[in-house]
Amino acid sequence: MRVLVTGAAGFIGSHLAETLLSRGDAVVGLDDFNAYYDPAVKRANVATLVRHRQFTLREGDVRDSETLLDVCSGGFDAIAHLAAMAGVRYSIEHAPLYVDVNVRGTVNVLDAARATGIGHIVLASTSSVYGATDRMPFREDDPLGRPLAPYPASKIGAELMGHAYHNLFGLSFTALRFFSVYGPRGRPDMMPYKVMDCIYQDIPFPLYEGGEMFRDWTYVADIVAGIVTALDRPLGYQCINLGRGEPVRMADFVEKIEALVGRPAHITTPSAPASEPRVTFADISKARELLGYSPTTSVEEGLCLQWHWYQKHVGSGA
Image (cartoon, rainbow, N blue to C red; front, side):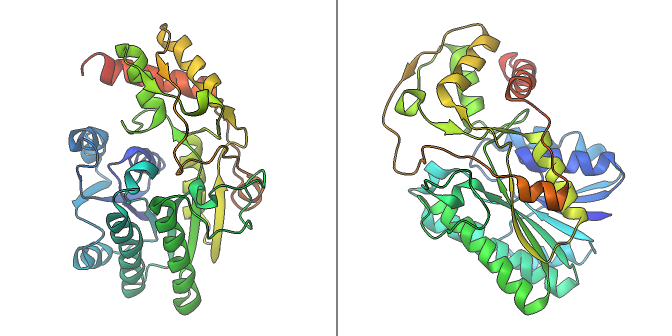
């Protein structure tokens, strides 16, 4: 198979490209190496990929429709559209940027796919689309429409645009709603990395509500397995949760990292901002049914793998 991966230099994108290459697929990775976090981190993510004979790196922005059309004209069986402005809290003060990248950028991907005959697109969406809800666990048929920040609002917009293009032009579009992904190469702004880094450096960090919040932490390899199967199986139009289905209390999550690092955490306990739901909890029965999805990595095992990566690539000064 020949796959275009947008956002290929990012955390999940680089893992996905690596997995596709390992099974013999040809991959073109598109990334703009923006400065949301250090572009050198993203360069390091693709350092091995660019040496692979089946991988081609293209630098460009999904907001640039001409670049996308040129890239897509190379011919692909599917697109994994992971390029996006991520981060709930950063989106609070940067709503226009999130709409521009996540909605207009997705429309550009859809237009380029339609123009070049690419019939199947898999979108990286987010559990944040569910907002604050008392319905547990989160199901794909839960009502949306009340996002807590611009980031999830923009992802709802991207999902809806996918439906419009499916309806009008017959494109297959699968939106995968990721739940709290973590693991090696995790972004520096994400909680697992930040907690490890702060404990390692003996720096205080905020733990909202004293850790009495819950997140459905899902290891990156399990997420990637779901993406790969979604790329292999055009399903018309679908929205599918990819989580573990086992919410973890945040205070317990921090304790697991403390045990790995071998130091106590120094925390502050502010109230959670309005952008943060108290719980995320994936119902993954639809993913099991349609994708054969079955996450296998426990939080303990996954954090151990991330800690080993941190020690080698960050804590060592590499």
